[in-house]
Image (cartoon, rainbow, N blue to C red):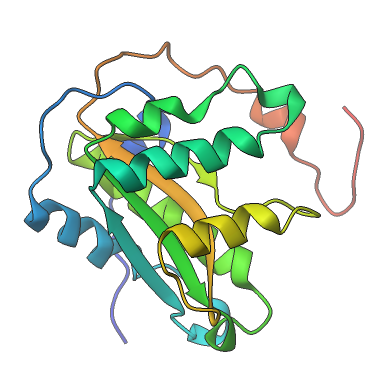
Length: 191
């Protein structure tokens, strides 16, 4: 059995420092870097180790524009200040899809886990990203329009949209609630 390492890796720093980035420099991202990120994304846990992922790499301006239109069209009222127009300026957009047959009724969870790996790997290489859903509960049209726009077959569900680019902004450090507010032992205890 492989021994666990006894030291903390730089993953702690990556997790704590990653921020949502919606503004990117015009600098291109080499295919080799994108492939490194997707290689790491595929190591995410998945239900019954189904490894259901399929990644669509989008660089075409027309496709990026269409994705922004779809996201804006189905944006909930409470999130209207977060228009998706910035997608058009991202050098690359990754659509994380999952194969329904290999997901064992855990399409969303499987897609989100791979997306987390992708975003952390991107940050560790100096890239910015932001999490966007490619689905909405009770609103199947957003997924269907993304499916049509990118010619995604019916056996695959688009789960997330991840724009990638070299950051053109420096967000404030994240303020998190105290750990004590989030932990209960043995049973729930209101804080």
